[in-house]
Length: 181
Image (cartoon, rainbow, N blue to C red; front, side, top):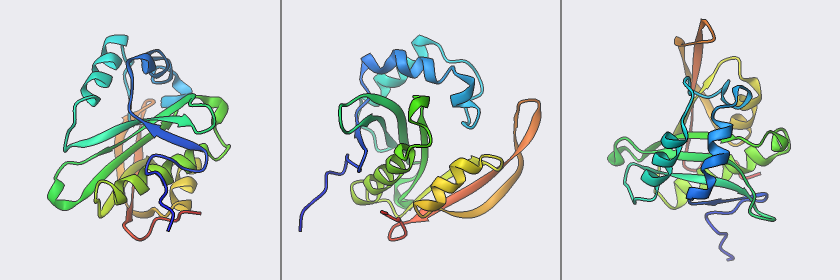
């Protein structure tokens, strides 16, 4: 049986965040088009991004964050993370963003989702991975469903953003439910 690297998908490779990633992260997480579907609300400073990267360099039971890079040449295209609140539950919350818009709608987000979830199940021993998605974000919901996430509920008018309240859909996938293709 040939083992697959836990950090590689078909199109992407996950790696640790590095200080030189800060300018791209700063640009992406201050771009309205990138953040309109994320839970981010306020502008982020260069200092905030540098501090975030520095915190991720420390091993932690609370989860992990990755840079999402092209497998072919290592170019940074986004970021992802799994946050663990209570390790005894074997549950993580997933966040993901493909910040480089030239890689949207080309399968990179789907591959990154599969890769980060596979890592969570196979390397972190998670039993369940969940995420939140705005109800109007059909593009993301289709990706999540494609990789095995199921709708578990709706937090009605849970977030105030863009001058209105938004519904938040809670989705989850259990170990054994991840669709690898």
